[in-house]
Image 1 (cartoon, rainbow, N blue to C red):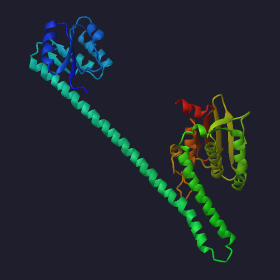
Image 2: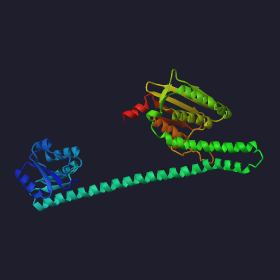
Image 3: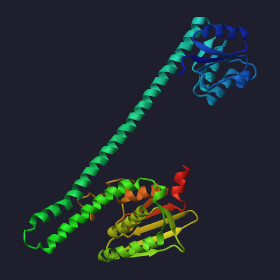
Image 4: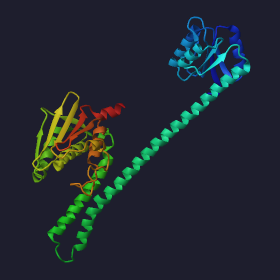
Length: 380
């Protein structure tokens, strides 16, 4: 940490340079130059605190020198020395960024006073900057804390509903089973549905944690996306039919291969397709399109649903976020689906983009690079 102030003087009067150096040398590191040219050729401004410059220097005058100093080293303060303290000189110096004036001839106490005021101002400015930086850090930390609190509240709220509800079905169903009497099929179905919901919620939590990890070498395999989408569409065909939604896919010519964590990639694509079915209106369409360019493979999933308000788009992908309140939305879940998709994309150096028009539907574009993220991780 610097404890000695660094001061530079530019004055063509050798006597002034000698007196100046003698007066300030006890408390400051002083460098003196006879001209602006010598100053620009030899001076080090990196740690400089104050530049004193005679206004009437030969060649480049003190005002022009001051402009150049403030441009090259704005952290330096500048004090003009003048034997002709006119209003014009004062205005020009202030416009160029001068902190103060020193009028020739100056006694030692005046030089010390001007220097002391400037250094004290610098000290207070540095303290103020440090306080401001600390306030900004505290503000950022507080904002992060509030965000964490909101996420915790959302987590507890959603978990409370999505875990307790199926658990209640299971416990109630078990309590209604009578000894030595076969349970009704409706009761078994309710227990089974509750267990499946509970299992799905736990799987989402595990998947969410896993989706944030970049795929390691042992996790990376080639996944052919055309085949994956065909399989998912076949699995979800009955669900689309029940919802009255037309499900279709357009495949890329040739193979569309992504290297990465296969299970995570499949889960992300499946969620987007399921999402399109669930949120499409009866009679609407859910469409999937796979495209492959020179360096990217994209999976575009669109629906003909109610769309999402523009102001809510930026929140999609946040964990435990639901566009509609969890008690009134049409589907269950923890609100982790899009967060998982987003994390899977980012873990593979890809991206998820969302566009939506209310009353027309939503388009999700999941993009992956064709490069191997595992090789990229090894290089890094």
